[in-house]
Length: 280
Ligand code: BEZ
Image (tube, rainbow, N blue to C red; front, side, top):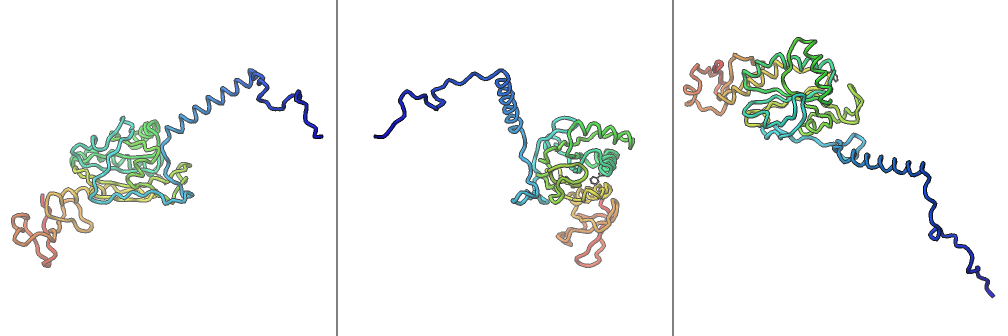
């Protein structure tokens, strides 16, 4: 005859036991864990997605911005307050130039030079905007140093692109330089890009330098002058051209149009090579 457990034996299932109330220490720990989890969830939801690092198996995002494209609008924070590209431009041209980080020596020389050129830029109806990857608070401290060291007043906005959002949009990142000098970071380095935008908001020129090479602002002014002249007259500017120098007649201009378009005269070196004095 098969034996069976006595029906009166106490069950080992905990469901029949009422749990002992947690000690005050355990209850306090549970509450602390709950608060930490809530704080973590809130912090994660406010983080911007980061660009992939080289260890990410997908290709890093690359800006597809090209000459002639309408520059994408964006909102950002600057040391002068909230910034919207199109609102800031209004009917001006704009130079947007990027930097690897605040408190770096080469960038400091560039920002000071741009500040010193403010009246030259204004005369050309050009606004200038810088971008660096640090916070507004760092920008404010850095600007104090730039002004004190160089004896300039820096009045243009510097975008605080802490998550590289604008740098990604404008293709200002060097993707093989992640977490490198000048600051430890998991993000790609923002290099020295220059975007020159026309008053029609189109990209007129893009120049990119590596972080180790400071830019020539004489060259940036030269490009602006060339662009603005060729928008007004049917000319292009030759190699090593400087403001005031002779210009080349656009190959598309017909001979019959030369007298009306170039009252200062045209030297026909070859049928395809025509030179005219500076048009203004
Ligand atoms: C600089 O601005 O001095 C700098 C920044 C990044 C790399 C090298 C130099």
